[in-house]
Amino acid sequence: RSSGMGTSSTTPDPAGRDLPEDKTRRGTSRGGSKVPHALLLVVVVAFLAAGRIFYSGEVSTLQGLLRYTGLYSGGMVSFSKEYTASMNAKFGALPESEQPEAVLKWVNDTFEARRWAQVTSFGPTGIVVTHLLRKLGISQSAQYLTIDTLHLFPQTYELMERCKAFFGLQDVLKVYRADGAATRAEFEASYGPRMWRTDSRIFDFITKVEPTRRALEENHVQAWITGRRRSQGDARDAMAIIEVDDSDGRVKINPMANWNIDQVWEVVKKEGLPYNALHDEGYTSVGDMVTTVKVEKGEDERAGRWKGQGKTECGMHVASDSGSINGLKKTARRVKEGYDWDKGATERSVAAGVITVTEDNFAEVVLGSSANVFLEIYAPWCPHCQGIEITYSELAVKVAKDGVGEHKANVALARMDGWQNNLPEAAKETFKFSGFPSLFLVRPSARDAPIKYKERGHTLAQMDAWLATQADSPEACSRNAVSEGKAAS
Image (cartoon, rainbow, N blue to C red; front, side, top):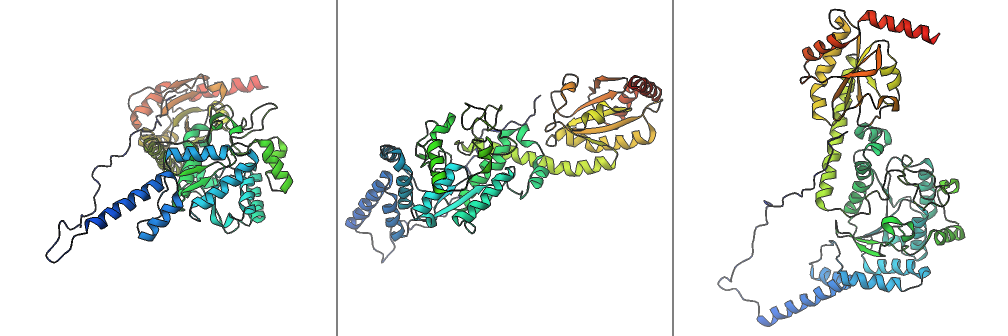
């Protein structure tokens, strides 16, 4: 079915921005003086030299020069492609065992203290990086950031606490979560209980990508260190030690890029470093508990992540242009607004006697009812679904009071979030629909043949009249109940 949740690829039009008032004096006033040509030449030469230093990658020297002149504002550092390539070649020429420490020393020498950070998910590679920062005596210059997706394993939360104590990170580790959610319950109230399965791209953006970008922005990070390795395969098998993120210009450093998992575990075991207990249970890579499984013998290290979903990355390390990021933001906002609406809609519908259906109770409530069931399959973000909500509740009140049609047929009204709840396998062929809302009448006499409401309007009178022509009469419902009772006995 078409969910209609496509994202926009357009970028905001920058036209129309207010420009600062130009307060530069044009020419000189009476009694003023012009800058001597010789001094102007010196200034031009100095800035050309500074630019050469800057684009060659000697960032610290340039920062010192500009900071002294008052022209450095602490913004983003920029590396030329040539400098980045030369540093990657330099570090790549070192023995693998020496690369991580050499890279981390370079980071500390190149970037201003507290303007670079380790972003860690407390995997074994990240834990080794944290260990090396402490070993080199430069841990105080770094910031430490982690993303709590609110869907982590209990063992991961326990490891996080152990690492904070082991490395002394209690007061420095900053934890970021989905915007506006501090618990999983709050997240599910805002985005639904099965977002991870319904649209993993939006789920990953909300739980990982957006919090990471917010963490880097709020902490003014110029460069961040990851625990990614080429041996993890797929999109990572050709990554460089030093990268520049095309989406925001930040420098991304992968000091362990050329190590394999055996080298990582050797350090973990030798140094007695903490690690996730799940690694002893067959999990070679640990992510969200809703999307991570144990790997089979012979599978790749990250084969248990998003298994069966055709993806290997959450998007945190995949550069995106501003258009796609804005599209994801727009979709995430639309989903949240939809579920904010659904909280009130569910309360109103329940008060009106409408039954709430999920994939867990579908068989019992819809297929097992002794009465007719008029089921609305909706999506909270769907404007048309929102538009008929009040009318649907009013219909439930009327039907409960008066019945349907001349026979006073007994019809129970129900609604199910069909965007996040799956139909049972037995119902997928008979409850076919391509959009929201979709309404079906399930009759006790023919539960395996639901009738889809195809009328053009959704007024109370139209739906009531349609039900009157389609619903089983009370007598038919009674005969069916007796027949089923005899069959069961």
